[in-house]
Image (cartoon, rainbow, N blue to C red; front, side, top):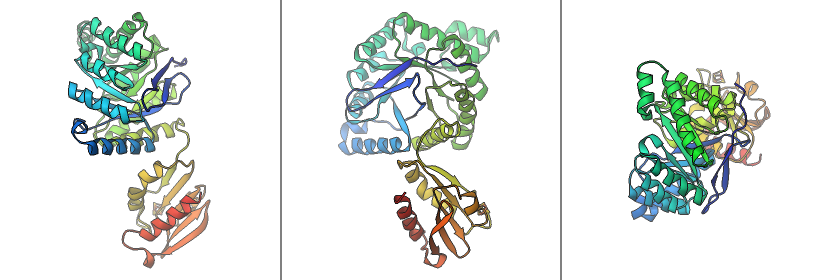
Length: 373
Ligand code: SF4
C-alpha cells in the first residue's frame, strides 16, 4: 500500500512539557501505559516523586508519551497533579464518563484517549472535543472489537463483513464525527488481539482516511514473549508501509519491557535512530563469561545512555571477538580471562581469579571503557 503523509498532531507544550508532533514527517514515537493506580500521589509527596523518577527511567529507555487509566474523579485529580510536575506529555485514558476528560483538561494533561462508542451521545463527545480545541490538546479515538455500534456488530455477527472490516468501519464513522466538528488534532487506533485482524483493520482504515495518523497496537497481546512476537509481526507489516505515528507494545509485563520491546521493533525496522545497540550471544557450553548475568545487570543502563554505539556481549572468544569486532566496545570470555575490546582490539584483560562473584571488576572496567567513548 502506498502511504500518503498523514496530518501532524501536536501534543504537549503545556506546563513543563515540550511540544511533540505525531504523524506528518515526524519519527514514530514510543508510548506505554502506567500499570498502577495513581491515588497514592494525592496523599503522599514521596509517591509523586517516586512516580516522576520512574517516568524519567521510561524516558531514558525511549518512551515519549505515557498514558494513565482515569477510572474516577479522584484519579483525574491525581493525574492533574502528576501532569503539573511531569515533563513528559501525559495521556488520560477515559471510558464512559466524559466529565473525567473535562476535569483532566483543566490540568496539563496533553491528550485524551476516548472510545466515543462508550462515552455516550454526540453532545458528550462534542463537549470533550470543544475543551480540547479550546486548550490545544489532542485526542485519540480508541476503537476495538468491544466497541462496535449495534448495526456494525450485527453485520460482523452475520459474517457479512469481517471483524477487521467492522473495526475499520467503526473507526471511520468515529473519525467522521470529529471531522464534522472541525477538529483535526486527533489520532485513531484500531486494535484487535489477533495479528491478522489488527493489520487488516489498520490497512482498511488507512484506505478510507489516509490523512489521519494512527496509534498502532495489538490489544491484550499477551505475556512478554508471546506479546512481543505478535506485536512485532503486526507492527513490522504496518510500519513497512509507513502506517503508524506512535506505537504501544501491550504486554502483561512492566512498562520498561514494553518500551524496550517497542524500541527494538522500531530499531529492527530502521525507524529508531541513535542510542546503544546491544549485540549479545545466546551463550553455550563454551562460555567463559556470564553473558546472561551481564545483560541482566547492564541492559537498562545501556539502553538509557545517550550514545550512538554498538556494544557486543559474548560468552567466548571462539565467536566473541570475531562476531563483535565491528562493535564499538565489547566484552567476552577468553580462556582464563574476561576481555574488554574496542573495535576488535583488546583494551582490558581481567583474570577469572580476579573476578568476584558479582563480576564487579569486569563491570567497573567495562564502565570505565564505556565512559571514554
Ligand atoms: S559466543 Fe561463544 S559462548 Fe556465545 S554462543 Fe557463541 S560459541 Fe557459545
